[in-house]
Image (cartoon, rainbow, N blue to C red; front, side, top):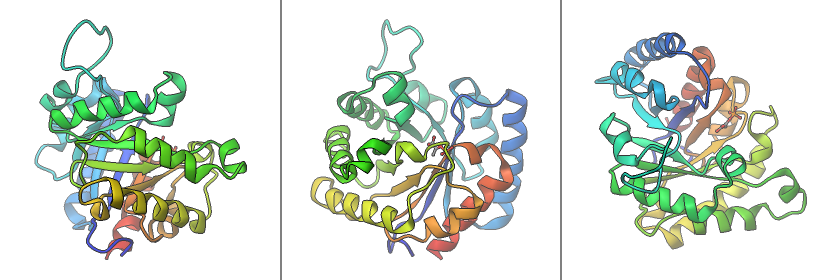
Length: 256
Ligand code: PEP
C-alpha cells in the first residue's frame, strides 16, 4: 500500500479532446469493465464542459465520478465563457481540476487565483484537485521542492481538508512528453508534499497526492507503487480505454 489507509484515485483529464460520440463509446466501455472488476481504486472522468451532462448521465449509479477541468471563483455574474462551481455541482460533478499547468501557462493563472477557485469549489461541495509541479528549468536548477512547496502553500485555501481536496503533483516537463521522473524522484517529492500537508492541512496525513505526467500502462505499476503516491492524474492515456484501464489496475494493485 502506497500510503496505508488511502484508497487510490485514478482521474482521467480529457483536456480539449474527443467528440460526443467518442465520449459515449469510451464511457460505456469503462463502465462495463468497472462493473465486473471490483477495482480497489476510485475512478474519475473529467471531460470537456460541453460533454459533462452526457458523460454524467452515463456515469449515474456506476460508482465512477464525474469531474470538470476548471471553474470560476464567483458564484454567478458577468463572466462570459466562464462556469461556476455550483453549475458543475448541479451537473453531478464531484470534483474539479484546478491550477493545471496548462491553465497556469495558457491563462496566466496564479496560485492565488487557484486558491480562490478552490475555495469556490469547496463552497459548492466539490472536491478540489489542485495541481502543482515544476518546469524542467526549475528542476535542472535544483529548485523543484521549493517551487512545489510555494505552489502548495499559495494554492490551498484555508477551508481545504483531507476529504475535500487532493494534490496532483505534475512536473510540467513530464506532461504529454513521454518523459517521467524516476520513481526515486517521485518518492522524494511526494514525501516532501506529505510532510507539508501534515503541517498545513487538517488530516493532511490522509490527503491524496496523485502523480501526473506521462503515466501509461508500461510505467503505471512502478509509479503507482511508489510510497505516498495515491493514484494518478492521467491525460493522453485516459482517452484510450485499454490504457486508462491498465493504469487503474496498476493503481488498484498498489493498494491491495
Ligand atoms: C495531464 O495533463 O494532467 C497529464 C498528466 O497529461 P499526460 O498524462 O498526457 O502527460
